[in-house]
Amino acid sequence: MLRRTRTTKTLAKRMDLQYFAKPHPLRRWRLWLSVGIPVIALVWIVSQQATGEKAYSSGPLASSHAVFGKKCEVCHESTLGFFSKQVSDKKCLACHDAPAHHEEKASFTPQCGACHVEHKGSLRLASTQDAGCTQCHADLGEHTKGTTQYVKDVADFDNQHPEFAALRPGMPDPGKVKLNHYKHLVPNLAGPHGPVQLDCHDCHRPGGMEGTWPYAGAELKMVSATMESQGKSADRAYMAPIRYTEQCEGCHVKDLQFDKRFDEAVPHDRPDIVQAFLYREYNEYFSTHPGALSEPIAPERMLPGKVYPPPPHNRQEWIALQVMLSDRILWGKGCKLCHTMIQPDDPQQLPTVAKSNIPVRWLPHAEFDHDAHRLLKCDACHVKSRNSQDTAEVLVPGIDSCRTCHKQAGPQADAANGRCSECHQYHDWTKEKPVKGNYTITGLRGGGKSGE
Image 1 (cartoon, rainbow, N blue to C red):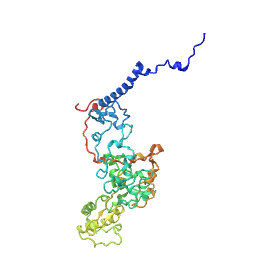
Image 2: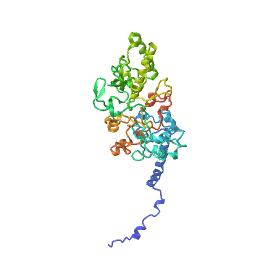
Image 3: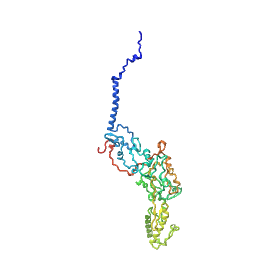
Image 4: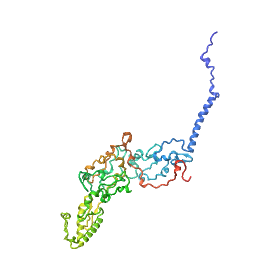
Protein backbone atom coordinates (compact mmCIF):
# COMPACT_ATOMS: atom_id res chain seq x y z
CA MET A 1 0.00 0.00 0.00
CA LEU A 2 1.40 3.32 -1.08
CA ARG A 3 2.03 6.08 1.57
CA ARG A 4 -0.20 9.21 1.26
CA THR A 5 1.72 12.25 0.18
CA ARG A 6 1.17 15.53 2.24
CA THR A 7 2.49 18.76 0.95
CA THR A 8 2.76 22.10 2.73
CA LYS A 9 0.04 23.47 0.55
CA THR A 10 -2.40 20.70 1.38
CA LEU A 11 -1.66 21.06 5.10
CA ALA A 12 -2.22 24.84 4.99
CA LYS A 13 -5.66 24.34 3.51
CA ARG A 14 -6.69 22.62 6.73
CA MET A 15 -6.08 25.84 8.79
CA ASP A 16 -8.99 28.18 9.52
CA LEU A 17 -7.70 31.60 8.57
CA GLN A 18 -10.64 33.36 10.24
CA TYR A 19 -10.02 31.89 13.69
CA PHE A 20 -9.47 35.34 15.30
CA ALA A 21 -12.95 36.44 14.29
CA LYS A 22 -14.64 33.64 16.14
CA PRO A 23 -15.28 33.93 19.91
CA HIS A 24 -13.12 31.99 22.36
CA PRO A 25 -13.21 31.83 26.20
CA LEU A 26 -9.52 32.59 26.67
CA ARG A 27 -9.59 35.59 24.38
CA ARG A 28 -12.70 36.86 26.10
CA TRP A 29 -11.06 36.66 29.55
CA ARG A 30 -7.89 38.34 28.32
CA LEU A 31 -9.94 41.27 27.05
CA TRP A 32 -11.82 41.67 30.29
CA LEU A 33 -8.65 41.44 32.41
CA SER A 34 -6.72 43.95 30.27
CA VAL A 35 -9.52 46.46 30.75
CA GLY A 36 -10.67 45.54 34.24
CA ILE A 37 -7.33 45.49 36.09
CA PRO A 38 -6.36 49.10 35.18
CA VAL A 39 -9.86 50.26 36.00
CA ILE A 40 -9.77 48.52 39.39
CA ALA A 41 -6.31 50.00 40.12
CA LEU A 42 -7.50 53.48 39.16
CA VAL A 43 -10.58 53.17 41.37
CA TRP A 44 -8.40 52.01 44.29
CA ILE A 45 -5.99 54.90 43.93
CA VAL A 46 -8.81 57.43 43.76
CA SER A 47 -10.53 55.88 46.76
CA GLN A 48 -7.30 56.00 48.78
CA GLN A 49 -6.77 59.60 47.80
CA ALA A 50 -10.22 60.42 49.05
CA THR A 51 -10.13 58.39 52.25
CA GLY A 52 -6.59 58.97 53.54
CA GLU A 53 -2.86 58.56 53.14
CA LYS A 54 -2.62 54.77 52.76
CA ALA A 55 -1.60 55.10 49.13
CA TYR A 56 1.69 56.74 50.07
CA SER A 57 4.84 55.13 51.37
CA SER A 58 5.98 57.95 53.64
CA GLY A 59 9.39 56.91 54.89
CA PRO A 60 10.66 57.67 58.42
CA LEU A 61 9.98 61.04 60.02
CA ALA A 62 12.61 63.24 61.60
CA SER A 63 13.18 62.52 65.28
CA SER A 64 11.40 65.71 66.35
CA HIS A 65 8.24 64.69 64.46
CA ALA A 66 8.32 60.96 65.05
CA VAL A 67 5.72 61.18 67.82
CA PHE A 68 2.93 61.75 65.29
CA GLY A 69 4.20 59.37 62.63
CA LYS A 70 0.79 57.67 62.47
CA LYS A 71 -1.16 60.92 62.28
CA CYS A 72 -0.40 62.24 58.83
CA GLU A 73 -3.23 64.79 59.06
CA VAL A 74 -1.22 66.74 61.63
CA CYS A 75 0.85 68.08 58.72
CA HIS A 76 -0.97 67.00 55.55
CA GLU A 77 -4.25 68.67 54.70
CA SER A 78 -7.19 67.18 52.83
CA THR A 79 -8.70 69.40 50.16
CA LEU A 80 -12.22 68.57 48.94
CA GLY A 81 -11.78 65.14 50.48
CA PHE A 82 -8.48 64.45 48.71
CA PHE A 83 -5.29 63.86 50.68
CA SER A 84 -2.46 66.24 49.78
CA LYS A 85 1.13 65.10 49.87
CA GLN A 86 2.30 68.73 49.91
CA VAL A 87 2.53 70.38 53.34
CA SER A 88 1.45 74.00 53.43
CA ASP A 89 3.33 76.66 55.38
CA LYS A 90 0.16 77.15 57.42
CA LYS A 91 0.62 73.72 58.97
CA CYS A 92 4.26 74.39 59.85
CA LEU A 93 3.50 77.81 61.32
CA ALA A 94 0.94 76.27 63.63
CA CYS A 95 3.86 74.99 65.73
CA HIS A 96 6.90 77.02 64.61
CA ASP A 97 6.27 80.69 63.97
CA ALA A 98 9.49 82.62 63.36
CA PRO A 99 9.98 85.40 60.81
CA ALA A 100 11.49 84.63 57.46
CA HIS A 101 15.16 85.34 56.76
CA HIS A 102 15.60 89.07 55.95
CA GLU A 103 12.01 89.17 54.80
CA GLU A 104 12.10 92.88 54.03
CA LYS A 105 15.13 92.52 51.73
CA ALA A 106 14.80 89.07 50.15
CA SER A 107 13.30 88.94 46.67
CA PHE A 108 11.32 85.80 47.54
CA THR A 109 10.53 83.59 50.51
CA PRO A 110 10.77 79.83 49.96
CA GLN A 111 8.19 77.46 51.37
CA CYS A 112 9.09 75.60 54.56
CA GLY A 113 9.14 72.26 52.78
CA ALA A 114 11.57 73.51 50.17
CA CYS A 115 14.37 73.46 52.74
CA HIS A 116 13.07 71.17 55.49
CA VAL A 117 12.51 67.90 53.64
CA GLU A 118 10.65 65.34 55.72
CA HIS A 119 10.43 61.55 55.53
CA LYS A 120 14.18 61.17 55.14
CA GLY A 121 14.80 60.10 58.72
CA SER A 122 16.83 63.23 59.50
CA LEU A 123 17.94 63.71 63.07
CA ARG A 124 17.68 67.49 62.69
CA LEU A 125 15.40 69.15 60.16
CA ALA A 126 17.43 72.32 60.69
CA SER A 127 20.36 70.61 58.93
CA THR A 128 19.25 71.71 55.50
CA GLN A 129 21.00 71.32 52.18
CA ASP A 130 23.26 74.12 50.98
CA ALA A 131 21.19 74.65 47.84
CA GLY A 132 18.54 76.38 49.95
CA CYS A 133 21.12 79.00 50.95
CA THR A 134 23.26 79.31 47.84
CA GLN A 135 20.27 79.87 45.58
CA CYS A 136 20.44 83.43 46.93
CA HIS A 137 23.86 83.84 48.53
CA ALA A 138 25.84 82.66 45.54
CA ASP A 139 24.62 85.83 43.79
CA LEU A 140 23.07 87.95 46.51
CA GLY A 141 22.89 91.04 44.35
CA GLU A 142 20.29 89.39 42.12
CA HIS A 143 18.09 88.28 45.02
CA THR A 144 18.08 91.35 47.23
CA LYS A 145 15.87 94.39 47.28
CA GLY A 146 18.27 97.34 47.29
CA THR A 147 21.80 97.21 48.67
CA THR A 148 23.23 94.67 51.08
CA GLN A 149 25.98 94.80 53.70
CA TYR A 150 26.82 91.11 53.33
CA VAL A 151 29.24 89.35 50.98
CA LYS A 152 27.40 88.79 47.71
CA ASP A 153 29.00 85.58 46.39
CA VAL A 154 29.18 82.79 48.98
CA ALA A 155 28.88 79.48 47.13
CA ASP A 156 30.42 76.98 49.56
CA PHE A 157 32.54 76.73 52.71
CA ASP A 158 35.56 74.97 51.23
CA ASN A 159 36.54 77.52 48.59
CA GLN A 160 34.13 80.42 48.26
CA HIS A 161 33.49 81.71 51.74
CA PRO A 162 34.99 84.96 53.10
CA GLU A 163 37.20 85.26 56.14
CA PHE A 164 35.22 85.78 59.34
CA ALA A 165 34.15 89.40 59.73
CA ALA A 166 36.03 89.97 62.99
CA LEU A 167 39.34 89.12 61.26
CA ARG A 168 38.95 91.05 58.03
CA PRO A 169 41.25 94.02 57.38
CA GLY A 170 40.03 97.24 58.92
CA MET A 171 37.85 95.56 61.54
CA PRO A 172 38.94 96.91 64.96
CA ASP A 173 38.67 95.15 68.28
CA PRO A 174 35.57 96.67 69.95
CA GLY A 175 36.92 95.82 73.41
CA LYS A 176 38.45 98.62 75.47
CA VAL A 177 40.07 96.53 78.21
CA LYS A 178 43.86 96.34 78.08
CA LEU A 179 44.58 92.63 78.39
CA ASN A 180 47.93 91.16 77.43
CA HIS A 181 47.57 87.39 77.08
CA TYR A 182 51.32 86.80 76.94
CA LYS A 183 51.94 88.48 80.32
CA HIS A 184 49.14 86.48 81.91
CA LEU A 185 50.51 83.13 80.69
CA VAL A 186 54.18 83.48 81.62
CA PRO A 187 55.49 81.15 84.38
CA ASN A 188 55.79 82.37 87.97
CA LEU A 189 53.25 85.14 87.59
CA ALA A 190 52.58 87.04 90.81
CA GLY A 191 49.39 85.60 92.27
CA PRO A 192 47.38 86.40 95.41
CA HIS A 193 49.38 83.87 97.50
CA GLY A 194 52.64 83.53 95.57
CA PRO A 195 53.82 82.59 92.08
CA VAL A 196 51.23 80.94 89.81
CA GLN A 197 50.99 79.51 86.30
CA LEU A 198 47.72 80.56 84.71
CA ASP A 199 45.85 78.34 82.28
CA CYS A 200 43.16 79.27 79.76
CA HIS A 201 40.46 77.59 81.88
CA ASP A 202 41.31 79.80 84.85
CA CYS A 203 39.53 82.66 83.07
CA HIS A 204 37.61 81.13 80.16
CA ARG A 205 34.92 78.48 80.66
CA PRO A 206 31.60 77.77 78.97
CA GLY A 207 28.57 79.16 80.73
CA GLY A 208 26.58 77.00 83.12
CA MET A 209 29.51 75.00 84.48
CA GLU A 210 29.79 74.39 88.22
CA GLY A 211 32.89 75.20 90.22
CA THR A 212 34.86 78.09 91.66
CA TRP A 213 37.02 80.57 89.83
CA PRO A 214 40.54 80.18 91.27
CA TYR A 215 41.31 83.92 91.18
CA ALA A 216 37.92 85.31 92.17
CA GLY A 217 37.45 87.89 94.89
CA ALA A 218 37.35 86.91 98.55
CA GLU A 219 33.54 87.07 98.70
CA LEU A 220 33.27 84.50 95.90
CA LYS A 221 35.87 82.05 97.24
CA MET A 222 33.25 80.17 99.21
CA VAL A 223 30.75 80.03 96.37
CA SER A 224 30.68 76.58 94.77
CA ALA A 225 28.71 77.66 91.71
CA THR A 226 29.45 80.44 89.28
CA MET A 227 27.14 83.25 88.28
CA GLU A 228 26.21 81.25 85.20
CA SER A 229 24.85 78.29 87.19
CA GLN A 230 22.56 80.68 89.06
CA GLY A 231 20.62 81.22 85.87
CA LYS A 232 22.35 84.31 84.49
CA SER A 233 23.86 82.44 81.55
CA ALA A 234 23.41 78.71 81.09
CA ASP A 235 24.55 78.42 77.48
CA ARG A 236 27.51 76.05 77.37
CA ALA A 237 28.13 76.80 73.71
CA TYR A 238 29.74 80.15 74.52
CA MET A 239 32.31 81.24 77.05
CA ALA A 240 30.99 82.91 80.18
CA PRO A 241 31.50 86.70 80.18
CA ILE A 242 34.63 87.97 81.91
CA ARG A 243 33.80 89.61 85.24
CA TYR A 244 36.23 91.38 87.52
CA THR A 245 34.85 89.74 90.66
CA GLU A 246 35.18 86.21 89.23
CA GLN A 247 38.34 86.11 87.14
CA CYS A 248 40.39 89.18 88.10
CA GLU A 249 39.87 90.40 91.66
CA GLY A 250 42.00 87.75 93.36
CA CYS A 251 45.14 89.14 91.71
CA HIS A 252 44.19 92.71 90.83
CA VAL A 253 42.55 93.85 94.04
CA LYS A 254 45.93 95.34 95.02
CA ASP A 255 45.65 97.74 92.05
CA LEU A 256 42.53 99.24 93.65
CA GLN A 257 44.12 99.76 97.07
CA PHE A 258 44.37 103.51 97.50
CA ASP A 259 46.04 103.94 100.90
CA LYS A 260 48.11 101.63 103.12
CA ARG A 261 46.20 102.92 106.14
CA PHE A 262 43.17 101.00 104.85
CA ASP A 263 42.91 97.27 104.33
CA GLU A 264 39.90 97.71 102.05
CA ALA A 265 40.19 98.50 98.34
CA VAL A 266 37.89 100.82 96.46
CA PRO A 267 34.92 99.13 94.73
CA HIS A 268 35.33 98.13 91.10
CA ASP A 269 32.68 100.55 89.92
CA ARG A 270 32.02 103.91 88.30
CA PRO A 271 34.25 106.87 89.26
CA ASP A 272 31.40 108.66 91.06
CA ILE A 273 30.79 105.60 93.26
CA VAL A 274 34.52 105.31 93.94
CA GLN A 275 34.64 108.99 94.84
CA ALA A 276 31.75 108.67 97.30
CA PHE A 277 33.50 105.66 98.87
CA LEU A 278 36.73 107.66 99.36
CA TYR A 279 34.98 110.60 101.02
CA ARG A 280 33.16 108.25 103.39
CA GLU A 281 36.30 106.31 104.33
CA TYR A 282 38.44 109.39 104.98
CA ASN A 283 35.67 111.07 106.93
CA GLU A 284 35.41 108.03 109.23
CA TYR A 285 39.20 107.84 109.53
CA PHE A 286 39.49 111.48 110.60
CA SER A 287 36.80 110.90 113.25
CA THR A 288 38.72 108.02 114.82
CA HIS A 289 42.26 109.44 114.44
CA PRO A 290 42.64 112.83 116.22
CA GLY A 291 46.16 113.29 114.93
CA ALA A 292 45.31 112.73 111.25
CA LEU A 293 45.79 116.41 110.43
CA SER A 294 49.50 116.24 111.29
CA GLU A 295 50.20 112.91 109.56
CA PRO A 296 52.71 113.35 106.71
CA ILE A 297 51.92 112.18 103.20
CA ALA A 298 53.35 108.72 102.62
CA PRO A 299 56.17 108.73 99.99
CA GLU A 300 54.41 106.15 97.79
CA ARG A 301 51.47 108.54 97.44
CA MET A 302 53.65 111.37 96.07
CA LEU A 303 53.74 111.02 92.31
CA PRO A 304 56.63 112.75 90.51
CA GLY A 305 55.84 115.80 88.44
CA LYS A 306 52.62 116.59 90.29
CA VAL A 307 51.78 119.88 92.05
CA TYR A 308 50.41 119.53 95.58
CA PRO A 309 48.44 122.06 97.63
CA PRO A 310 49.77 123.45 100.95
CA PRO A 311 49.28 121.39 104.16
CA PRO A 312 45.64 121.23 105.28
CA HIS A 313 44.41 123.33 108.19
CA ASN A 314 41.08 121.70 108.93
CA ARG A 315 39.07 118.52 108.46
CA GLN A 316 37.56 119.53 105.14
CA GLU A 317 40.93 120.44 103.58
CA TRP A 318 42.50 117.22 104.88
CA ILE A 319 39.76 115.02 103.38
CA ALA A 320 39.94 116.87 100.06
CA LEU A 321 43.73 116.38 99.93
CA GLN A 322 43.51 112.65 100.71
CA VAL A 323 40.82 112.10 98.07
CA MET A 324 42.90 114.02 95.50
CA LEU A 325 45.95 111.85 96.22
CA SER A 326 43.87 108.67 95.92
CA ASP A 327 42.32 109.88 92.66
CA ARG A 328 45.75 110.40 91.14
CA ILE A 329 46.83 106.89 92.11
CA LEU A 330 43.63 105.26 90.92
CA TRP A 331 42.97 107.19 87.70
CA GLY A 332 46.64 107.34 86.74
CA LYS A 333 47.80 103.85 87.76
CA GLY A 334 45.27 101.40 89.22
CA CYS A 335 42.25 101.80 86.94
CA LYS A 336 44.38 102.84 83.97
CA LEU A 337 46.22 99.51 84.12
CA CYS A 338 43.25 97.79 82.46
CA HIS A 339 40.79 100.51 81.45
CA THR A 340 40.83 103.44 79.08
CA MET A 341 40.25 106.56 81.18
CA ILE A 342 38.60 109.47 79.39
CA GLN A 343 39.72 112.72 81.02
CA PRO A 344 37.24 115.64 80.98
CA ASP A 345 38.09 119.13 79.78
CA ASP A 346 37.14 120.52 83.18
CA PRO A 347 39.73 119.35 85.77
CA GLN A 348 37.04 119.61 88.46
CA GLN A 349 35.04 116.84 86.81
CA LEU A 350 35.63 113.14 87.29
CA PRO A 351 36.97 111.06 84.40
CA THR A 352 34.82 108.43 82.72
CA VAL A 353 35.76 104.84 81.99
CA ALA A 354 35.40 103.62 78.42
CA LYS A 355 32.94 100.74 78.25
CA SER A 356 34.65 97.36 78.23
CA ASN A 357 32.69 96.14 75.16
CA ILE A 358 34.22 92.66 75.36
CA PRO A 359 32.13 90.63 72.91
CA VAL A 360 30.49 87.49 74.25
CA ARG A 361 29.97 86.39 70.64
CA TRP A 362 32.57 87.40 68.10
CA LEU A 363 30.59 85.93 65.20
CA PRO A 364 27.09 87.39 65.64
CA HIS A 365 25.79 85.96 62.34
CA ALA A 366 27.01 82.42 63.03
CA GLU A 367 26.81 79.86 65.80
CA PHE A 368 29.70 78.09 67.48
CA ASP A 369 29.61 75.44 70.19
CA HIS A 370 32.67 75.33 72.48
CA ASP A 371 31.21 72.33 74.26
CA ALA A 372 31.26 70.29 71.04
CA HIS A 373 34.97 71.14 70.61
CA ARG A 374 36.03 70.42 74.19
CA LEU A 375 38.42 67.61 73.19
CA LEU A 376 40.75 70.20 71.64
CA LYS A 377 43.30 72.30 73.49
CA CYS A 378 42.39 75.98 73.52
CA ASP A 379 45.50 77.04 71.64
CA ALA A 380 44.94 74.35 68.99
CA CYS A 381 42.50 76.84 67.45
CA HIS A 382 43.47 80.07 69.24
CA VAL A 383 47.03 79.68 68.04
CA LYS A 384 48.12 83.28 68.72
CA SER A 385 46.85 83.52 72.28
CA ARG A 386 49.98 82.47 74.21
CA ASN A 387 52.26 84.93 72.42
CA SER A 388 49.84 87.81 71.89
CA GLN A 389 51.14 91.04 73.42
CA ASP A 390 48.90 93.45 71.50
CA THR A 391 45.76 94.03 73.55
CA ALA A 392 43.83 95.01 70.40
CA GLU A 393 44.67 91.76 68.60
CA VAL A 394 41.59 89.65 67.81
CA LEU A 395 42.38 86.05 68.73
CA VAL A 396 39.35 84.41 67.10
CA PRO A 397 40.43 81.41 64.97
CA GLY A 398 40.35 82.12 61.24
CA ILE A 399 38.41 80.23 58.61
CA ASP A 400 41.49 78.20 57.60
CA SER A 401 41.57 76.71 61.10
CA CYS A 402 37.95 75.57 60.76
CA ARG A 403 38.52 74.16 57.27
CA THR A 404 41.10 71.70 58.57
CA CYS A 405 38.24 69.74 60.19
CA HIS A 406 35.08 70.90 58.43
CA LYS A 407 34.54 69.97 54.78
CA GLN A 408 31.64 70.59 52.46
CA ALA A 409 31.22 66.86 51.81
CA GLY A 410 31.01 66.18 55.53
CA PRO A 411 31.06 62.52 56.60
CA GLN A 412 31.68 61.38 53.03
CA ALA A 413 35.07 63.10 53.23
CA ASP A 414 35.86 61.69 56.71
CA ALA A 415 35.45 65.17 58.14
CA ALA A 416 32.99 67.26 60.10
CA ASN A 417 30.19 68.85 58.11
CA GLY A 418 30.89 72.16 56.44
CA ARG A 419 27.41 72.91 55.13
CA CYS A 420 25.80 76.29 55.74
CA SER A 421 23.37 75.08 58.41
CA GLU A 422 26.28 73.86 60.55
CA CYS A 423 26.96 77.47 61.58
CA HIS A 424 24.15 79.64 60.22
CA GLN A 425 20.49 79.98 61.08
CA TYR A 426 17.84 80.99 58.57
CA HIS A 427 15.22 82.04 61.12
CA ASP A 428 15.74 84.56 63.90
CA TRP A 429 14.22 82.59 66.76
CA THR A 430 14.54 85.51 69.15
CA LYS A 431 11.56 86.98 67.27
CA GLU A 432 9.49 83.81 67.37
CA LYS A 433 5.78 84.37 67.92
CA PRO A 434 3.95 82.30 70.53
CA VAL A 435 1.69 79.54 69.23
CA LYS A 436 -1.26 77.86 70.89
CA GLY A 437 -1.25 74.08 70.96
CA ASN A 438 -4.31 72.37 69.50
CA TYR A 439 -3.71 68.67 70.15
CA THR A 440 -3.96 66.32 73.07
CA ILE A 441 -1.61 63.40 73.61
CA THR A 442 -4.26 60.96 72.45
CA GLY A 443 -4.92 63.23 69.48
CA LEU A 444 -1.31 62.87 68.37
CA ARG A 445 -0.98 59.23 69.20
CA GLY A 446 -4.27 57.80 68.02
CA GLY A 447 -7.29 59.94 68.79
CA GLY A 448 -8.64 63.14 67.37
CA LYS A 449 -8.04 66.79 68.07
CA SER A 450 -8.86 68.22 71.43
CA GLY A 451 -12.56 68.82 71.59
CA GLU A 452 -13.39 66.21 68.95
